[in-house]
Image (cartoon, rainbow, N blue to C red; front, side, top):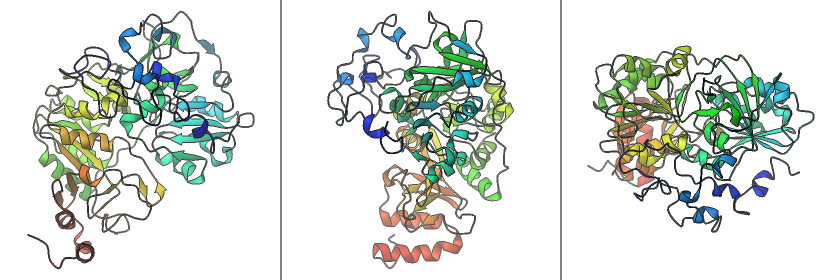
Length: 525
């Protein structure tokens, strides 16, 4: 068996063997029939000819794969009663029943050395199952874990267990940074809209999925709860599904359901979801929020994450009208605007009347809000983060944060120099989606200075810093000192605009370095 650190991406790579999973998993969004807006039809699902960017029109085959089954795939020839019923893509009622385990140890006992195990992510972290898996550290070797960020620390990611477990992080959260820094794990750079493709498309197919789901309803369906983004494609593609049935997991709506009979092993647990503390915005964050809110128009479609700046924006939108939400995630600040009638979702083109998300994390109030709430639809990231689906909505206002921005508009959002602290996530998906939306506003925001007082508007990015959002993607950059509009501006004009929103203490030095870099003695009018 090859080392999980050195060999897994060699012997699993589709560049060496076309993945058989392509026969069952074309990557067009897995949206149920009737969910697509007028004219929206991913290739292979309808006849309009529309295919989301990066996916497969007729005859397409990734160059590294050659001409696999994907290029010959015709969904019209698949009968749900045969091929799909035999695959994990079909998560409805089956003729079999899962093994009901008496303990979590029994539930994870069938995981083998060398297998790839998907972990239900974000606030859905199945800690009970992970604790049981960690206890097998002495008997397991080269088990590869894969997940988005986790809101509970994974005991299997302790660097002392590196011989047993290696983690591929699709996003590096605060609780996983030590794992990556130690070499017991690594980061997989991927747009969130493409993360389902890694799982469904045969690039990183899981052998096992560990899931944290709601109890079954009267029809036998469990919900994937507060994280569907990658959990749905993992459940559809894993050979073995192991679920902890948890009464604390909200029963979320959308494309989030798995029938009890689709699981292989289940165990009943009582595990609370993580509560994310709310930090009141600082004066700087309130100033940024006020600037952004002043740019939001009535009828806009919002995308924003969690944190003090999104909360500051939401707090300033109380007098707006007819807003909608199409996002990859949302937090508690949205609830007040829904309850006050500011957010109606009626102006959206994709799923009008529904708040669309792929995961949620936050307070108990948030978990109660999404529980059995048909006005909130959870779907996987190939739907929520598809650029063209986002862009079909009007006035998309995408609000994303940065660690630093250089004078040409390059955005670092995943690392401090070479130190990984987060990931690509959906920033580029939504910045581009907003750019192609009629009247859209792609916004990058950040305080002008770091905690140590250094400028976050910088002449050049730190050595090793990752460029997440490129120069041509960036339209607006906002600090507490205002907004810089960069689209259509040359490099000198960009530098001038960005220096104007830098902290006053740093503007003189930034200007000196800009003049030296661009060979000018004064700003061009």
